[in-house]
Amino acid sequence: MNTQNRPLTLFLCLTLTAGGCSLTPPAQSPEDQRAFEAARSRKQQALADQAGLAAEHEAASPQREVLQAELDRIDGDQQAALAAHRADEQAHADYRQRIVDARSFAGDCRAQAENGPLIAGERGRA
Image (spheres, one colour):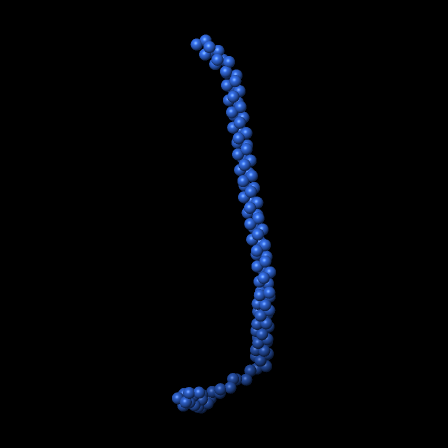
């Protein structure tokens, strides 16, 4: 202890003692003592529980990483399947449109074939 602070410490002790103050804590009632011990016990149990949870968290970290990697792989597979499905749907829509276009073209060809002799006859007369 610093020797310069000794007079101040001595002065404080004498002042507190002379003023009727005691440096010892007041006596607790039995109920207060039981409540204090119960609170201390709950605190120790909470600290033990916290340490147990921290240990479980550490132990679960590798498993959690494995599961996360598996979820990422599944998600990637799902995204790829969804993209393939969308491509298939687009290909099917394109195919249906080509059928509509082909039917329209066939109708135009039929009309030309039916009108061809009339057109040829008119040109032959002209």
